[in-house]
Image (cartoon, rainbow, N blue to C red; front, side, top):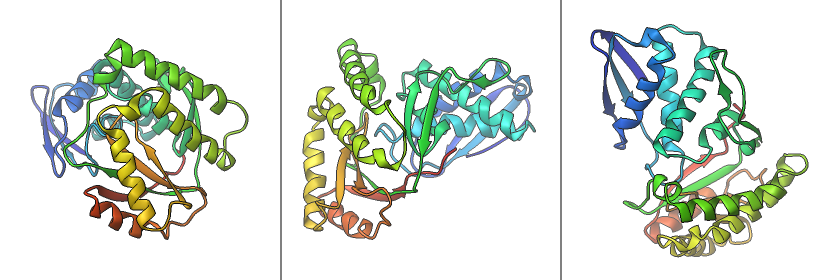
Amino acid sequence: MVAYGEDGKLGLTVTFESTEGDSELYEAVLDALVTEVPQVSGIAWGVSVTISLPTAQGFGVSASGAIASAMAFQRAVGLPYEESLRRAYSVAHKVERLRSTGLGDVTALAAGGVERRLEAGSPYHGSELLNGPGRAEGWSLTTPLVLAWRQGSGKHTSVYIDNPDWKRAISEAGLRQMESLSQGDWGPERWGDLIQSADAFSRESGLIDDSSRNELVNMAAGAVASAGLDEEVEVMLCMLGESIVIAPADPADQGEWVESVITELEKVGLKGLETKVCDLS
């Protein structure tokens, strides 16, 4: 994400260098930022955006784009790094809420790693950018992962969280799983608990049965079996996209399996991408 500008009427031109995204996201970030940072007004802005993953697939693209653009605008006018970062998380959270996109993605990114959210809300707030009310914690062994999806599929998060029935089902299923996940210490020893809870959530919420997601999971599981790895890795649904993540049963795994899994995924018509759990923020 690169932001640039010149003196003139406040506005924004968005250029996508790879995958096409949603220009309105970056416009909403700029609008929200103007109310908090007067320095960004009176500038004709441009941003150059590179997106490595498809949108509306449960990969947190909108949250990461909102954070990155809020950060880029502030740094372009010379604001300090730490102040800019805290405000970027705060502004991105507001924009996500306003646009009904993401389900705690901003707070998760603020924690980094394998995250559990203990309190809902923005990670920073107010003019002093104090901590909270959102609270999350994470750990990371930079565990290797494979993301996979079907080309051309995906639903905007607002389809679910703006629908009362879906919102209730998702909230109730999420609360049930967090009751157990929020107990005790949070570290690599909880990896298996997280995998089990992710599977339970996808079924109890009904998401696994919507938009042919069950078929997608079965396709990926078949690819994993063809690679002879069904005892070593787990296939899990991404929320709320039509996509899956393939993760090792052992979080300390070094990822020797990744290439063979991606090859088998491509044979069944799924796009696969190698990545890893990020470091702590």
